[in-house]
Length: 150
Figure 1 (cartoon, rainbow, N blue to C red):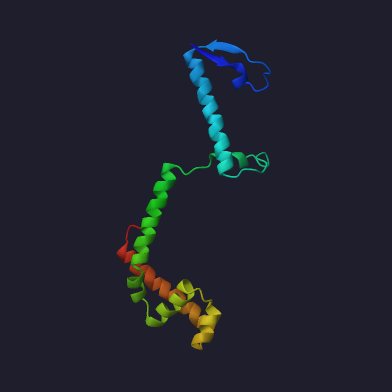
Figure 2: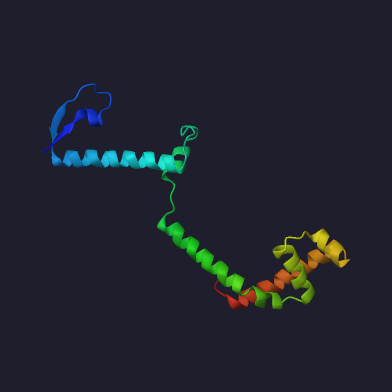
């Protein structure tokens, strides 16, 4: 049997009152107190100073949102697949013609838009668009040969 102060559990109590409770009740009360403290820590950590009643999902998202082991595993697998594809990029670019590869690098890696690539090369922008599309098709064939299951 444990002796607890009811003022500790119920802040609205104005006087000290001790009560004996069984060990099971004591453990349940301690667990509830831990969960409330954890809740408050998460609220501070996530800076949830806005109204959590704004939407039905807000409080759950702000305070309980954590990545599940499944999400972590999927993220790792996606990252590994991305790295494999990135490592095969030079070989895939080799399957495109030099013009296609140059335009794909300019568009996707350097971030230059198609009209600017056309002006730099002195061709119509539709030629750039067609070259990029065909180059991607050639690269896709290479990737399909390298990674048949993906």
